[in-house]
Length: 128
Image 1 (cartoon, rainbow, N blue to C red):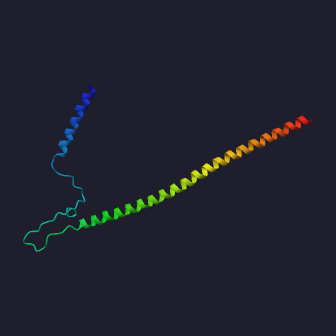
Image 2 (cartoon, one colour):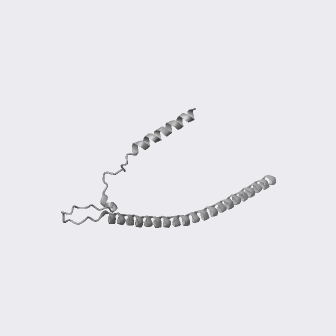
Image 3 (tube, one colour):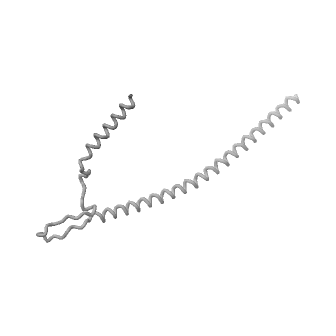
């Protein structure tokens, strides 16, 4: 029963939203410029001013091109940094492996020294 009520409420809400936005008017931002999208304005025949050409279109294309170039530069920089990171990580792993091997050797040699010390101590005790 609760699920059925939720479904009805959801459908009602969606229908209300649909009717609110169904007025036929598209959303127009405050700084919207018709000339940026290739539409031309017509001037009456009595006027001698020619029909305007869209000037914003070229600016938009230039802006997109600049953004594309900037994106390519950032991607190249990212690739360079990732390559450096991989090199440093490989060196780090090599050094880490070498450090671990040397640590094992140190511990093994320290154990041998302790065994030798214990043997010397046992021999001294037996001599007395």
